[in-house]
Image (cartoon, rainbow, N blue to C red; front, side, top):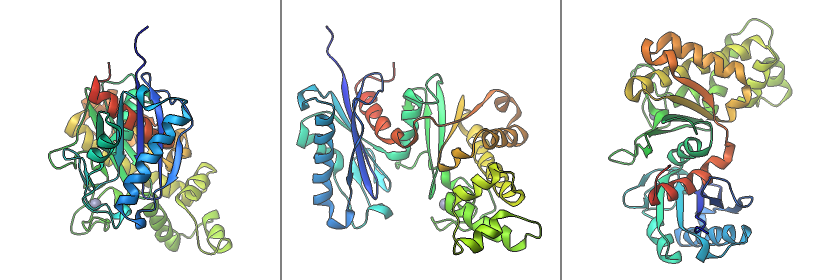
Length: 330
Ligand SMILES: [Zn+2]
């Protein structure tokens, strides 16, 4: 019997880290093990928690370390992928220059691959998710920010400085008058289409809105708080203002997608994260704008889809990166 190939994927986030052993076909061998990251406790403690999460993931799958072929660790940026270093990520403060890959490799004596979390999520979708049948795929992940990943052939586009696929910072509006982005520039996609900015735009639109909208009632009934999900839920109900805000979001995302189509001409563009709960009409709206504004030839056949792995894409993609490091997708 051939040796069973097993990869452990660890997805380190600012709040929690999540790991599972994953088979050669991309199926997790147990539910993921989740531990608190507690970055404020320092990077030594962080590295130890990473190793403990990996150990528990192996145990959760009723395996031993001897069964593990390779390990993949993914984190948010800033990072140096080639050097295996976490540099100075805003959501892992006060960590700085943490040698993640070499630490994990030394602790387990296994081949260890390090990757950006959004790139890994894209690879996960490409390997066993929505992009499984595609030969090239781009992922936009919609959350507090807008992340991205580009997979061409069986390769992740990391870029020379580990900043390939930073799709949230595609410029979709003029840099001297566009909306201000968290990166300090104006006109980035993220400044329009992240969950945070969907809420900001909804508040602005609401201030100028003269027609009826449940968003107004929500606004007063819920202590002035609503979320991007509320906007999309109301849009699904047909609320006119919420539909406008959601449709504008589809338009902005499509502009980002058109820029990517003109750059790498992928077979498929996948959208993941909270807003995909809005459903098929939102996907169709993005597709309509892509076909209207994108390069005519590639947009005729480019596939626009929602992600299918949900929040598991990170650790499955991390395992996929470990596998890619050993043998590639085939
Ligand atoms: Zn930006």
